Length: 232
Image (cartoon, rainbow, N blue to C red; front, side):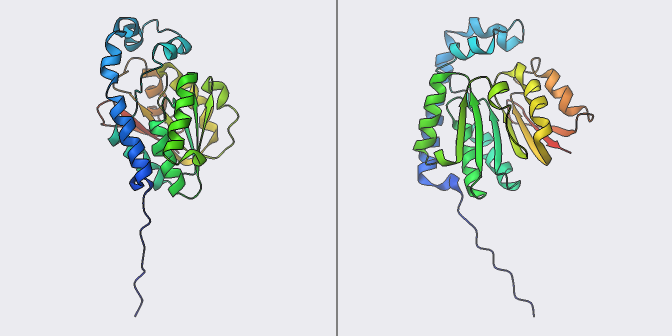
């Protein structure tokens, strides 16, 4: 008679009190974005409408105090996708204050000494993201590069297991074109805000959904729209 295989579950880093406490703090702080946004809506309206948007550096400066993070549900989804892929090389475009980076780094740690490489254009956010990762106990599993992601992420070596796109929307298409050759077969690209910024992200969606770019893609129905694309 065959013996039953005993599988001992390993704890998730999302249940680590240090990680959980830091995520709860950051999500609570991010709820203030609604009030911080009110005074600058006129100057940002053109960006939201996808018309004559200011340069990313200008937008980054205007939004230097805004968290604009993934929701807790999206963060957990990111973590679960990374775990299901056993992702050890995760790339993030648009780190901001590092909320999504913490979810990704938690998965990278649980997958066995993996690493997240992110990029952030705004110096103040970059500095704070590093501090937040340290507070979560995950600094050893993440690197955040300061500057233009089209430059800071250009030298990444393959293979990449997972990409999160959550920066300036007009750069999603250039970013995926830059990173696609370095994605392993079966790698996943998650792109946030495809419903919120439908006009700005139409070229990106056309690219990943065309069936001719090496991706199969579907929009996951989170409120902001989360595009889930698999490298074929």
